[in-house]
Amino acid sequence: MPSVAPDPKRLPANAPLVSDVAWDTRLQSFPDATFFHTSAWLNVLQATYGFEPHHVVLDGRQNGLLPIVEIDSWLTGRRGASLPFTDECTALADNPETREALIQAGQQLCRKREWRYWDYRGGRDAWPDATPAVSYYQHTLRLTPDTDSLFRQCESSTRTAVRKAEAAGVTIEFSNTPATTTDFYKLVGITRRRQGLPPQPASFFDHIHQHVLAPKLGTLVLAQVNGKPAAGALFFQFRNTVIYKFGASDESFQEVRPNNLVMWRAIEHFARAGFEVLNFGRTSLANAGLRRFKRAWGAQESMLEYVRWSPRHGYQTDADRASGWHTRIFRALPSSLSRLIGAVAYKHIA
Image: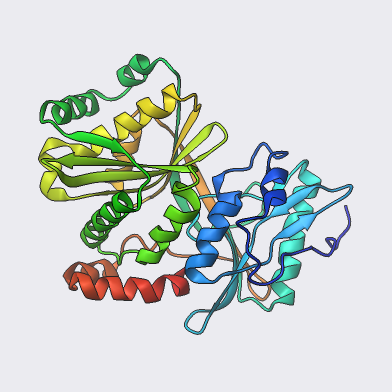
C-alpha cells in the first residue's frame, strides 16, 4: 500500500449534479451505496446551502467514490464534511485497500484546501485507531411481505397505539405534492420548537420536494385528524432500503397516536412494495423517547460513530447538539424568530 494516496479527482466547484447520470450509474457497482450517496441528495445540499463538492473518485486498478463537500463559513470557518445533515455516508470501495486510499485522499484534500477539519460520517471501519467524534444509536428493521408477522413483533403498547389511532378515525395519506410538503414543514416547525431547536430553512424542504419527492425517490406520509395535519414522516428510498429521515407532529393530537399510525402504514406500504430494510436513521444518545419509539417496532439497535480529523490536531471530538442550554432558549423564542435563525444558521453549523 503506498504511503501517499493518489491525487483525487473532483467535480468542478458548484457543478450541478442533478443530470449526472454517470455518478448514479457508478453507484450501482457498490453494495454499500445508500440514498445519501446519490446525486439527488447532493443536489438538495448544494441547492439549499451552496456547499461546494470535492468528491474523491478513484479509477483504474482502484475503484472508489467518496462524497465530500466544502463548508465555507465566515462564522465557523472552512471545513470538509462527508456529508452534512446526513446520517451515514461511508467511503465506497471494492476492497479495504481502496477504502484506505480514499481516506488518505480525503486527508490530502483536507490539507490542500486548508480545512480546519474533515467530518467523516461513515462509521469508524476505515479509521481503526480513531477516537469517535460523536456517537449515535442506529436502528434497522428487516421487512417482509408478511405484514402480520411484522405487526406481531411490535411491542404490545405500539400495537395498542396503532389500533387506537385507527379507532379514532385518523386518516393516512401518501403524497408527494407541494401542498403536502408545505403541511409537513409546518409540523416540522412545531416539532423543532418542542425540541428546543430551530427549524431547517423552508428552502431545504422545497429542494427535497424538487430533487427527491417529485422524481419518486422518496415518500411523504401524512396523518390527518378531522382534516387537520397531525403527524408526518419523510422517507428516502434507494434499492431495497427505505430511510426514515424526518418525523414531525402536532402534540395537541397526541392522544389519538397519529405518529404510530403513520409509521405502521409506512411499514406496511414499503414491505408490500418489496423493500427489505427500513433504516430508522440516527438517534441522539440523550433522546430516550425516540430510541424507545424506534425499538418498539422490533428494530435492531447498533452504534453509529463519526470521525473528525484535523491536519493540525489529529482526531477531535464533537458535541451532540440535540440537547443543551440552547434548547431552553429556542423553546422560548417566537416561531418567526426561530425560523429566521434556522434559515441563517444551518449552513454554518453543518
